[in-house]
Image (cartoon, rainbow over all chains, first blue to last red; front, side, top):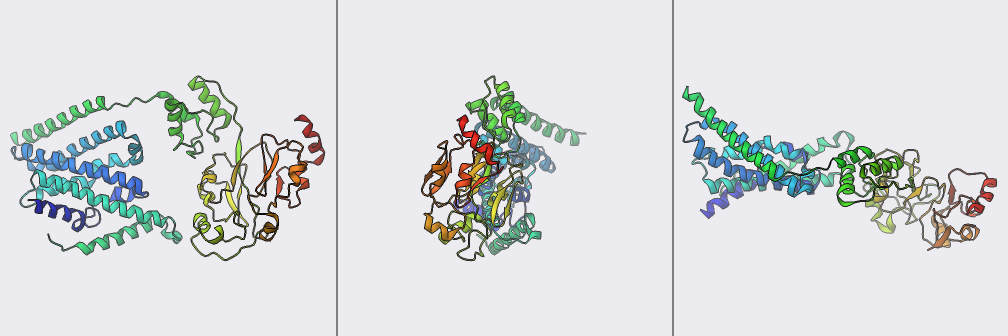
Length: 195
Length: 278
């Protein structure tokens, strides 16, 4: 069991990295990666939301959707749950960690419709056999860690780009996209690994 | 019929429960927002320059209301902002001395020779970390890679002949340029003071003569000439106490290096009369 959980988390962080291999959650990856500090905050917020979302959607799937035979409603049901969850996290941060709240700014509400969060919820139940509660949460948490790793690495790259002599036509987003693709290429090195 | 009813009811119920929970959370995590904060934010300049020492205009407004921060920190807003804030907060307005930033270096390409050619990253901080604190012979001088140019929210700084130059008409006195300058050669000078020493070199006289043709050599002629006692020479560098300076301009005439600048270049006749007022 422990071995399987470790395999799930290693796969989610490196082999099937959400951002750099599956290309989910690109919006915050590009939007909040200008500084390592905010990238770290965003990564932690996403990790937190992903773990909770995995848990909540597991309950929703197994105690509401499956017994009623309405599994086809899962996208809508999951979006509702994730939206409520993000709203809750936002209220919590505004009250208790205002600095992180203002640092995340517009990107926190954007987690609501973040395909990475919905993706992890849907992928959990599409496994064969579907993940159990613990496996779902480990998968959600490690996928979040993978996102955190990717966004912090990328923020480090972008901080260094600030000091480079970049041709005018490449300044700003073009060079960011080029470096993101190079980072993704590096993660391709993990592909095919099986645990 | 049930094929539609069941999913609609189930999802509706999920939504209802979540909605109720959120409503509860909104009560629990409710944050009181003082309406004065918004009003004060409106009075400030809105430049978000950070000159007040806070993260931005709204952060400063929050600090005034919540932490009792002084109300005269917004140099961009000036006296008008202080008066408006004083009215909102119900305290007495204090007088602010409007300031503007001045680059205290005259080491243009012509005046201050380079000791080596620099081809590295075009950034003041990077250049200043190298041997001798930069490529100029004078280790105190402006490197001219425009760290301050980027920091200025008003676009009032340009590099002229290898030295940063601040256009006083645009300067709002926020001091952002001062914070980023690795050589610490940008000073905030009260707007009414037109006379200042445009040099930051602490090198001794003979050494200075080889490094810059105009830099301050610490000869103390200005210190002796000043009738108001506003000038002191420490570490071979003259500095003017702006609160004591009467703008008489005697030091400007006396300086053998021409490094004390009078922006207005006021006529000498006025200058002689002025000290009597002190």
